Image 1 (cartoon, each protein chain N blue to C red):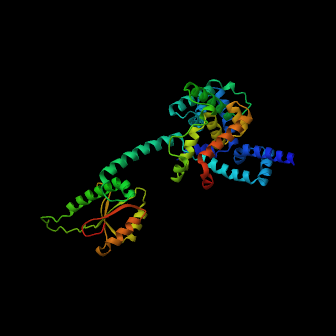
Image 2: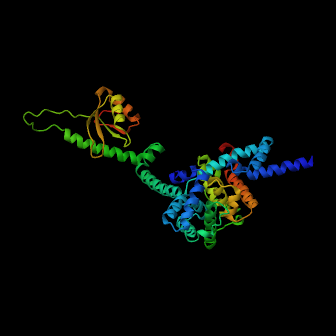
Image 3: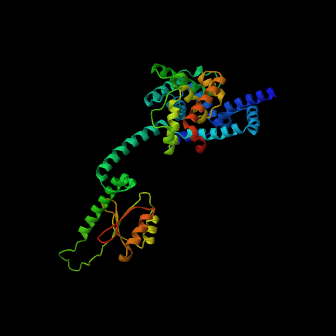
Length: 198
Length: 210
């Protein structure tokens, strides 16, 4: 199930990754294509996961991912150095994904998703079958794009709320609030069986 | 008193909002100390912390898009296979698990029996004897399929433990024919079927319990 490529980057300490990014980025500014390829390959699994959770359409994920990385190649000078390079790249990816969702008329914020009900088997039944992942996966699917983004950036990409606020271009308190509500929804989806689950 | 309650509620709300990053160890030292202090006093937040750890672990373990895609294709294949099995095996009084695996077992048994049949034909007594040719006894009584990952020493151990000799193979279906003492066929068969190096063991010939 686990993608070995994803595991590879996840166990790499953040500081070492950041140092490697900075070195590659300096070469990319000098139009070093090999450095860009290395950066692209390094970010591909992470962005695929992030964008996959956001836009949920494989063909769109690949397009948005490449659009994002083209910005890195075409406009490296637009990175001012005020944040990590990874935060900057994820920020580009997030904005491009949200723009694409708007064009597809998909809900971005929580106002539309709040009361959606899953038409599939109820949580009790699915839990009874031992399919926690199924219940949780369906619950994540029902979250708004913004809620999915904070969940993914926090849990999977292990980013702190300041980095997430920069990526999503919103106040820190908004990140905390989105995370709070997203978690509450996931817990609610797992309903009374949560204590058994823990 | 009211102020104390108010302060507690503020810390409680703050802790609730910071728990994901507390678990992720990305809070500042001051924030972490504040959460630690509140957790020591608040049983509800300690329970939430346990939930938060479980939630995080399960979200991280959720399958990636490609895994979901594969799972969807796999479901389609399983449903198709199941409908074929129920058509062929539906009328037989078999347990559900056997019915589900029925098509696979049937295919393997068919391959083995075809292989064994070919061997049996080869073992039929010749109508003529070349002068000087010695009769070579190749009568096996069990046919087995070894697992692809089984190593040579696994095969040797399986044969020794079952008192079996390898008398022929591989057949066209990659099966091997074993010979075990006639009195121990059932015991050897039972032993072979539990051996991790062997995926399938079937008796050859009549009068042997399958």
